[in-house]
Every structure is written in C-alpha cells, then in structure tokens.
Length: 201
Image (cartoon, rainbow, N blue to C red):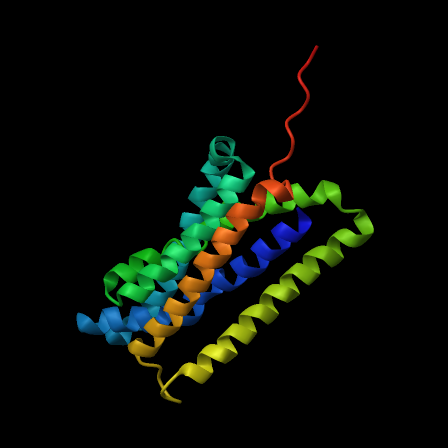
C-alpha cells in the first residue's frame, strides 16, 4: 500500500505542476486573441488566486466525497482530474484553457490529506519524515527528467509554439492514462482502502 501511494504521489506531483509550467503561454494566447496580451501577468495572478479559492471550497466537500467514493475512489478521481485538465490544454488554447486552470489545485485538496492520513499510522515516527521526503524528491526528479526529455522534443529554442506544447502534453496525457489504469487495477491488491472494522457482537 505504501508503494502504491508512493507512485501515486510521485506522478501527481508532476501532473500538478504541468499547468504551472505551460499555463502562462495558454493565458497569453487566449488574451492575445481578444487584444489583451499585455495583461497576461495580471490575469495570471488572478488565475492563481482563483485556484486557491477553488481548492479551499473543494476541501470543504472532500470528506463527504471520500465517504461516498472510498479512499481509492477519491485518489483516482483526483489523479484523473489532473489528466483531464492536461487533456483540455492539449485540445484548445482558447479562454476555456484559462477556466480549466482554475481547477489546478483541486486534485491536491481532494487527495493530499487522505494520502497522509492513510500512511501516517503505518510509519514509525523516525521513518515517516524520510518516507515523505523521498516521495517528494522522487516526484521532483521524475518531473524534471520528463521536462528535460520534453525540451529536447521542442522545435524552437526560443518561445515554444503551441504545436510543440500540444504534442508534449499529448504524451503526458497518454502516459498518465496508462499509469492511472495500472493504479486502478492494483489498488485492491495493494490494500489502499483500510479494512472495515469487525462487526460488533
């Protein structure tokens, strides 16, 4: 179960930061279409603020949603939302992309507290911080390597054209879908959902 959550946290780190890396070109393109390209920094800040508020409101309903879907369900939902967000960015660079970016941190609000709550009782105090640190380090390294590979696939050393961004994000979506499927197929065997308490006699 700890390995399953380790892999999930590692890939979710990368997918959480993909919109941050590629988001501003989408915002700039959408604003340029309506003659507001110079307002990109201001709008980017506003989008970040809305992201935080959307995450806050999602956290208010997270416990109720976890009760309905179970731990595996809400974790896979959160990862699936990240993949879906990248898929939308792959399909369009219009103002719709800006609206979708509002949801960037929602998957973190729906998953991070429950991941920590699941692993905390299973790890001794002296190894808990090490486990979480290694989890974060692995996520950063995997994401950095993927960006290095993606940069090598770009056709221009200056501003990356949308065609390149679209192709790169398409590969991320395909990889994410395969990882999501693997996690879904192995979740029960990994014992992600805690066993129900024995019935009272």
